[in-house]
Length: 433
Image 1 (cartoon, one colour):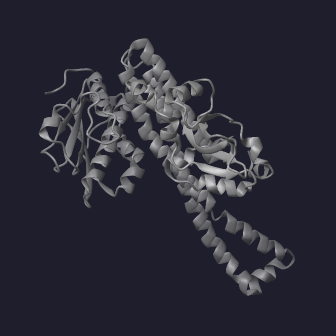
Image 2 (cartoon, rainbow, N blue to C red; image 1 turned 135 degrees about the vertical axis):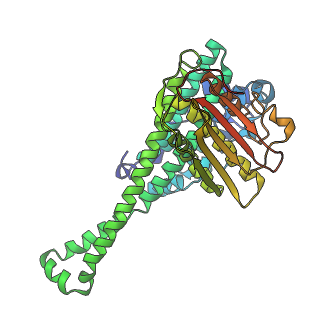
Image 3 (cartoon, rainbow, N blue to C red; image 1 turned 120 degrees about the vertical axis):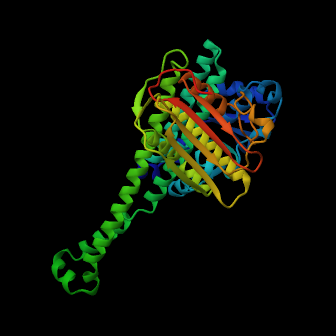
């Protein structure tokens, strides 16, 4: 939808979602209602007055995990509403509506908008994709892919009893989606502050002097400034274009990686993965790039210790999943340490003639000795909000590739080193002890 068309649209015509529940409705009832329609959000009402928003993802997460029904079934939906929902009056100008929607930060950026009347009466829910242009359409596609992949994984789990595998794949996709959202927001910010607007103003000025343009440029004080200004503006636009192109390329790589994870999962643990020759250092760099936004946000300094080595034949996407998870875990360990000097050291090198190692080390919180033997167990985690299946899944994937994922830590506060050992030729040989 073009902006000019949106500006002439009555907001009420965009509120295609009319779903609502009473604030005291039990969670299992809300879960059932979400199964009966396709909308991702539902308004929470007290009488005719809307007080908040609930989401399919949040309700599905609470009710869908192993003990969710027993724990949360009788909770009231008012206890699990979306934080900081955006309420918009029906008469709000479309431009103001877009600024409010696109100006939100973090996870709130993706929440739909609640349309209300003068007395806070509920008029419907406006989906974010209906109000934004290309960059928001990318966000909508991201969530569509995530939901589609989730449905496929749940179906596969029911058929093959592989719920553990499904959750590990979701975990890896979630890591990539963080980077997708960061790139999307950066593109939006750059477009909003683009120097193209300056170029439009300059064009208007030149148009005013169309009849005497040579004299204006040669003699007028303002006109004399235009040629050097155009040169400077060209450089700024070139830099802006380069940055946008880089972020677009990064978005494309991440979306392709998500698609490849889903495709790979269709034959997970049944058929050998596709093997290809890759530069191991480049694979490590890709994992760092996927986590780049988080590493920068947490002030983590990355040190690369790459030894010269020939290309290795590996299942690239399985290895990348393992590395992305290791870097993501290191990022949180460093943040929880409270240190000012946060270091992440990654290494690549040969281990004998036929194998190679990838190491991921940090100087974060470390691991106590009693946890070292449990670190790869399914469900084990020491991080608040952690799921405990990332390392377990990584260890299993390494074993399937004829390799081994190991850990070493001197104890609490002394950091940790993870080592991924794999064969150079992709064969499933016995791993070294």
